[in-house]
Length: 188
Image 1 (cartoon, helix red, strand yellow):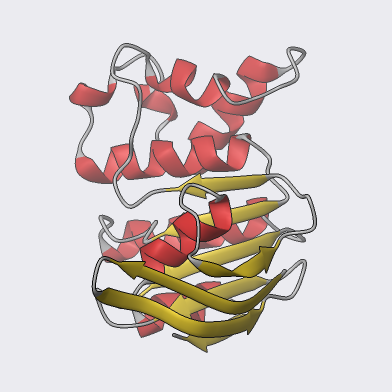
Image 2 (image 1 turned 180 degrees about the vertical axis):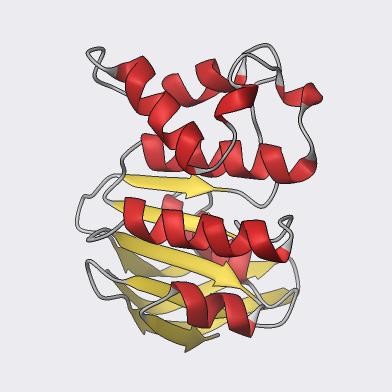
């Protein structure tokens, strides 16, 4: 994936002024910057949720999935239904969703609704759903931020296993998290 001469502003506030970046396929890349420096905006631009003022982002026509900082689960659906919703193939849909919930230690909450979950549980369900979507490029916006240290270590290990061989972009300001999870670290 290549980003060339990317320009983006919110009104008078310039976020990117000629950003050039290349992300290697099949690797986990962590993008680091202090808060407010455009990490989440970059993911939204890559996902096509917002348009740059100029420049280009070439994703090669691949399917992009995104996990936002906040869980964004559907409140009227159970945890299991939230994950099953994004799985295209009907055969084995429930089993795949349960497997992902098990990997992130939230399978016991499968029949609960999002408002019954703690922040960390909701974050893990959101991560399971993003992986269940099975995108070619997976964008993760602070996916481990609401987790205690033991759970964070477990979730990082499981996520690395589940996304092996995929192109993943993690945005974070946590150096230890980037080092533990990513193959490559880039600064904005």
